[in-house]
Amino acid sequence: MISNKHPFVSYAQNHEDVLLWRLFQNMAEGFYVDVGAAHPEWESVTKAFYDRGWRGINLEPNVHFYTMLEKERPRDINIRALAGRETGERELHIVGQSGLSTASLENVDFLRAKGHAISHQETCKMVCLDDVFREYQAPRIQFLKVDAEGMEQQVLEGCSFTEFRPEVLVIEATLPETNTRREDGVREYLSSRDYKFAFFDGLNDYYVATECVHLAGLLLWPVNFIDNYMPVKEIYLEKRLAETEQTRSQECKLGLSDLLNRLWSLNRGKVAPLRAEDVIWAYRHFLRREPESSEVVYGHIAGCKNLKQLVEVITGSEEYANKSVFI
Image 1 (cartoon, rainbow, N blue to C red):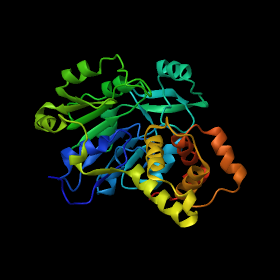
Image 2 (image 1 turned 120 degrees about the vertical axis):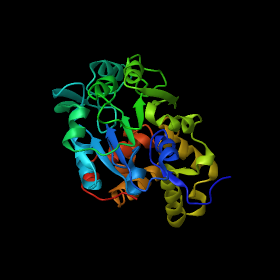
Image 3 (image 1 turned 60 degrees about the vertical axis):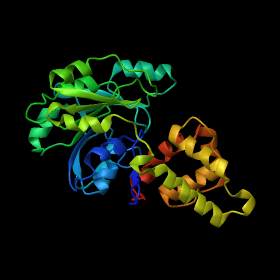
């Protein structure tokens, strides 16, 4: 039977937070570690947990996202650094304000082959997870999420998993923007550290510590309606629809089929080219204002392939970084 309580609002790209909430929903407070945290809300695995009183450690090398994390996550420990198997410095190759920036040269070549441009490089500090956990005296960790764009194995090898043993690990396991599994030694390394593989969601591998193996039974099936969740992007779209109905005439209102197309566009970023309504909604929601002119609107339409890309551009702007605009 489906619970009558309010739906769990999912922010994560692949609903990773829904699966994790299935495991930890009875915990009023918990602790997470997010390697490659990126945006504090948009496609965040930890936002829903933070909103419920949890806290944790976020590692994010991109200064743009790190600045927003510092502003929006005051309870969290936010560290501007890469994580790896050793300390030092490493070049981070920035792909605009997307979550594709990487310190992996192999990933750089793959991204360029797919048409992504490297906008610039930054020298970033590199730390080991063991050192971070000791320095900040991490309590018992419910989950560790690693999205390091090709550096996942190096991140994990910087943690011995002896003194600090997260109960669940969520590790990105595919090549960028594909379902193709990356060939690496992550599973073997984690097995040697007494972590059991539990589930693959098409993007991430889930592991549980052997002392928490009872949790694996809750990872045997994918996210589904029984989990009683709502993607936050549906909330965005509902607000857009309400605003449209208030400000536009009947013949310009969004129909059901068009709304579903918009939702698919926002979730997957591959369908439904931009329209003026999309740009106006994005400005209202993320910047809390109207676009300056029709030229600005059509400039976005010409420069962005879809709604997902538009949101990345707007949330990557200096104006957005200086505002508190989260819903």
